[in-house]
Amino acid sequence: MQETRAEPQEASKPMKRRAGIGENALPMKEITTDSHIYQTTGIGELDRVLGGGIVEGALILVGGEPGIGKSTLLLQMSASLSRMGKKVLYISGEESLRQIKLRARRLGDDETDILLLSENAMDNVREKLETLKPDYCVVDSVQTMYLPEMSSAPGSVSQVRESAAILMRYAKESGCGVILVGHVTKEGALAGPRVLEHMVDAVLYFEGDKTHEYRLLRAAKNRFGSVNELGVFEMASDGMREVKNASESLLSSRARGASGSCVVCAMEGTRPVLVDIQALATRSYYQVPRRTVNGMDNSRVILLLAVMEKRAGLRLYDKDVYINVAGGLDLTEPAADLAVCCSVASSMCDRPLPPDVCVVGEVGLAGEIRAVPRLERRVQECARLGFTRVICPRDSASRLKAVPEVEVRGVDTIAQAFAVLDVFPSRQG
Image 1 (cartoon, rainbow, N blue to C red):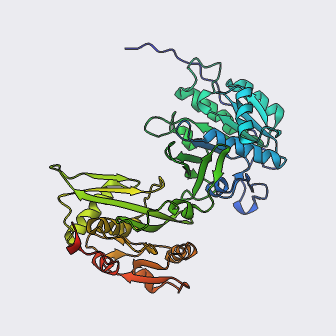
Image 2 (image 1 turned 135 degrees about the vertical axis):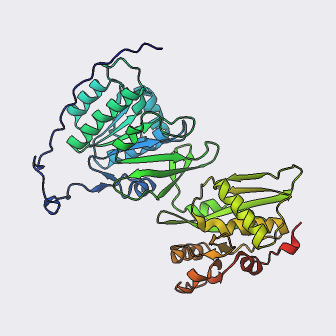
């Protein structure tokens, strides 16, 4: 048994109504949305993930591992909005004003008019917000904020919930766009109560290993746009740089002339991205062969290996198989199935695939190649980067409009795909 102290519950204040919004229910057709527009941040990749920009009165939560670049990106965003003439308030509960100034100097944004506040008491933060009336506000981080009248420590469930509720009420009442920085647990989930993610309008996650140069920004929730969009950034000495041509960057270090490498065009939201899938199949010296996968679902890859052994005759029961998605991306769509199979077959036969070939297709349990969506957009991206051949499902290829300088070859089974690419089970080692 553990004794706990009951906290006095503060009566929640009713939300004030903004000017122009009546107290009564209104028909939807009479509600105007002229003021609820997207404000671009000046950072194209961030705007892409947000759905076009920051909506007036939106509450956005940005999470990620320590050192991944959350504070750096939001400070750059604040500087960009300040240059557009917007009043931006940057509140930090973790850094002093001098520390923020030094970081801004490293980014080259120390001469802007961003208002800086080092505070973590929510009553003082609320007072400053009502006094300054900023257009946009960044709170870094929500786990450091606390209400003095509550006895629990900062970062506790009750403190995080009440602090977020105060900021949500202010955002909806004033129309100020509020961006919160959130800590994550060792499992990668946002720290604090789950209700925090339900309260906000958008949840953005920074992904990527700190040892890699690329950072990926995804939306796990977005009330104003798609959750399938992907923003790619590169961490440099002067801050986060946009990677506008993600396909070219991800393929720049591709090993040409090596077996076990296959390029697939994956869709991240509306953006096609060419990704290099690498496979290595070697003789196993273990009782149970190893299956190591990086960047894809491990169970999905094991299923594909079983299909290849049953339907294409590849002997994999005594081979260790390693799969890697180059660049640190996580592929989830099944259109990458055929590329995985081709890269494994290439490694088994020790025969490199042609460097100008891109492979797209979903593989079924019978070894059939199933159709994939938005094939025309994928083929156009392949043509833009100089790929001259695309291996894809025959059903999708039959409905595709001709793309100049690209030969589209439709296949029905993985055995046909191996034959087209000249990798055969009889050549396996």
